[in-house]
Length: 446
Image 1 (cartoon, rainbow, N blue to C red):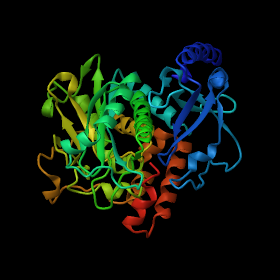
Image 2: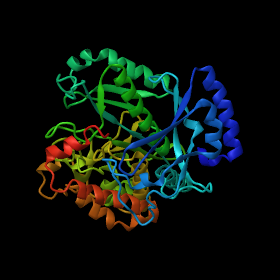
Image 3: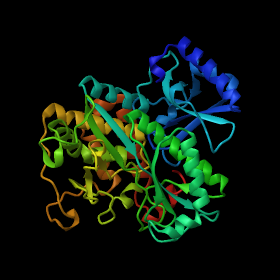
């Protein structure tokens, strides 16, 4: 990653990369990061500037730490308004020619201060730090984030109304889906599944699990690629939590598995369904912190129009084997390597680096405290009187986040306060608005 190399090393690697990219017909490189509202921001440079950018970074204003979904701004204790600058430093390990955007390559960026120090508000840095803490315990985490999207025609209406998971919409868009598959594969991504989803115009793709930071990077690359392929087919894409009021929305389910010395701790252990003690305690920590984690993983007012019972969104704080109404669904898989847990309550309005970092921090707290996993919920929690509902609105999630000493410490004061300021401001922005207004306001922002 970018922080493991000196400036001189980054420059040397960029020179070598630029030579290869030029041979591949690349003219420019896009650097991407994700703000606290979950919006992807970019800057680009011509290929001849890649070496300078890798060595010194590209300027990026710090006010995006407190930007909202509508491109307005709020304030946080550390925000400086129009004053100051940061440097975007591309991670050359993830430099990827874009199959659906000929002539362009992409790389995720870390953010640094003008003096060359890591920016404390950098979400990617946060995810990396927590990952390194996990590794110091002799553990590793493999993660993958499902990507769901709605494809629309030029009028903004869903481009297909065939049955959910149905062959009709697959046939209607087979050329489009084939190009999505080809583009992702050409970029070195291992696609596991690609299929129609439930809502009108909705599809889903999943890729192979990776390390947490890498999984977040890949999620952004997958979304960029789908959007680019869609544009080439005259289609629009929305990753918003809800595209149509009252309908199933777009999730960004996080799959994760805990490993030690090559062994998957979700398989072959003495606990329920083969869980090892470390995995039990880790998942217990995640469940304990889940209401506050929603401020990271379900960060939009629209998120709570998706996160409702009986829509397989995981609206209840419970876990169960293959229980799609539970927030944490345990999956044993057909082999030892496939065992994992799925967090269903998150969506694509989230910054994926905040999500993986926050979940890892919560799981680590469960390990450190030896938290027991609560009893399993083996049936539909909607029908259980005692089932605990997760926050049902953004203000409720913000309240839980504000009370979380664990996440405040894990994120660090500057990043925590910036996230909190953005969530409070967006809760106020949408206060009193109808569900239809909320859906309309965010439909094309993600």
